[in-house]
Length: 213
Image 1 (spheres, helix red, strand yellow):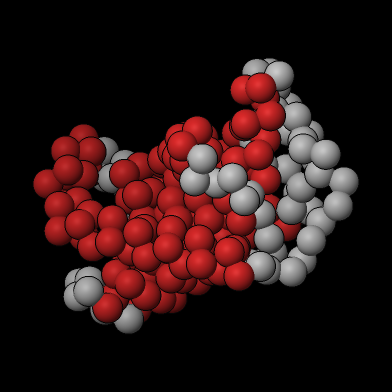
Image 2: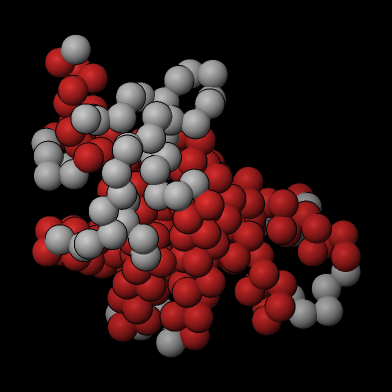
């Protein structure tokens, strides 16, 4: 039986009674396709993020991390679609690998970032026992991915930065993660479900059933 929709009050969405740990072939294929698409978005964002984020950095150093969350969305998106343990981590790793393969400026170090960012989202879905998939879980997964990004960036790119910068950067990364990776992925899933592209996934069936009811 499909789970109910997320209440507008923001409480956690209804949960499916049974968790399947087994990945189907379609799960692997769709997760890979979404991860590759995310990696191509990364490649484009790598080329243009500087001018876009510069005004935020000039206004308040560290605030640029709000938009760095574009690098986080495959983790949440794949997690919301596939709904299996490891999906969020897999989606972010595939995206990072594709970004590196097409000549990303950070090369294969992107894999390390992808692993930690994906793990941040994965841990949120794990805490929710892989049973809650509405807007609030998506936002929280985005926060988790943003926290992972902040840890990596502040450890390696901004090592020794002032505490106030680190605090602003971390908070901005998590807010951006919630809004862009979390909320954005939730909207993408709903859009894909409306086209029928997710008919073999619970996310697609749930929306179809709500529409029919």
